[in-house]
Length: 105
Image 1: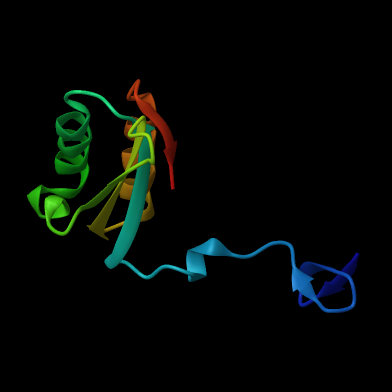
Image 2 (image 1 turned 180 degrees about the vertical axis):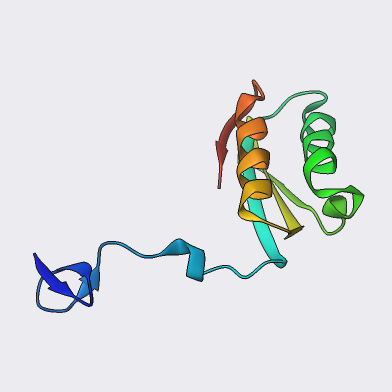
């Protein structure tokens, strides 16, 4: 490994292995979150309630939803106005506790 400006780099092209993520986001900012879950009755209401608790009612504006080819799964994308890293972390944590949720991106 080579070091440059205190950061580890791989190979000769200087691909950074570590990025300081705190510099990537400036709050408040629009932040998209995609939830992939097993399709089922009441799923959307459950996920919407989590977003309302963490991001307010405006989180439900402009939500897009797409079912899988056989309608066994659904992906729901929300665009929230994130106020802090802690807000995003708390939202991800609660979403992961929902039984139908398989992935949060």
